[in-house]
Image (cartoon, rainbow, N blue to C red):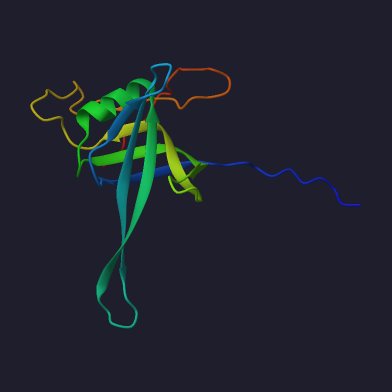
Length: 152
């Protein structure tokens, strides 16, 4: 007989990248804003055979909900640098021709804009306002968590 083993469940992600295209802001049937965008995240490494520096780019889909989604849709554009934190979420869908697909996306609970808004004044601290937003939860809580300043 085996003993029960309790494993720590951890699903936390933090990424910094640039938007690959303009964000898509939509609204659910109940009127909740949801914003989708993809971040390009680079990893630079030196090829051991050639000695040349190379880039390995990953394209990460991100979804943001509620007020933060509205701010992201209003302020971000292709090429905008962004810090996002949240959790990985798997989803499945069916294509128009009936094929089943699945993938992972970041469900962001906090997004930090890493450049100043065009033509806008910055926050008193000299940093841009973060776009905070909790993802929808089964408990129905819609409070946004506090965020720390990003050190870059």
